[in-house]
Figure (tube, rainbow, N blue to C red):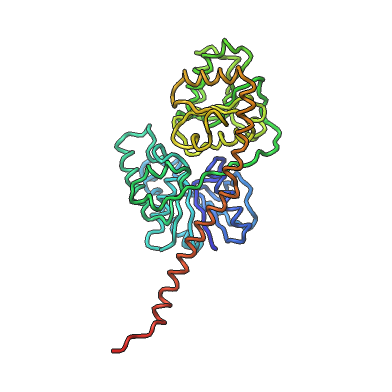
Length: 392
């Protein structure tokens, strides 16, 4: 089968990683695979790809363009994408991320090429409708997505709850395929954590609520003087979080060392992992921490953590945005090493529930379904020609 995959970039990220996993599997399974990104061709992917995969950077990014030039770039984008996809002659197109999904569906209007779109985040807080954007921009963008998504052959979402976000007209196109949680790789850590240590990991953005984590840790820091907090990641809130560390008198106890290229190597040094986001899609960092056998605390946000954690058995779920509840959960586990060991041992089983094998199996089922529909459609004209004409 000739498969085209489309994504904005193949830089490091959860969606990008999973697209690369799919592409490599399908290429190894003798499918013809082409990956299209909006980056320049010279921008190398952050993931190793099978040699048989064709990688095409279309140089369609609008970053750095302003005013009329940006407008023209936006107008040209679906036209250039259409030209590239038609030249590849795929039997099916798989698109990742909401804005790319909309562009793919628009670009292939009238072509009868089936498009599978994959939502990789919480659609209520996607790049189309971020809370920071004004209401008058969010509403039209959300409506546009809900209209354009009716053109999709399938809509892949990460959790069952996500389906309920979409209008009834497209819920029937949705199918649930959670991200895989892989067995931890053996890595030599590029960061050294103090001991004992609470660890969090992710982009330093408002969604992740690391400010909440700092406030919760500050409530327990004096009572637990040996513990440290390390927040691994980089992003636009770095300076604001450094200021919060100073304001809470946590210098020497809370650290922002930047990003890591060896997440498993760093996670294995931690004693406790925390995810305190306001919203998620299916948090990869939480899955990686659980796969490493770490006890975890997570906010019960939409969506993801409640699918991964049974509170009290393989982790702890707390109310979203509640610093006092988070502080209480932190103190409970800091004080109780046996509870930490118990939760961590149970957490490691997450790699069996969300296995790569099951992830690939479900995606293959979608491809098989589309292939069968295409075969059926191609037979209809033939069958009509073979039917005997009724006598006049």
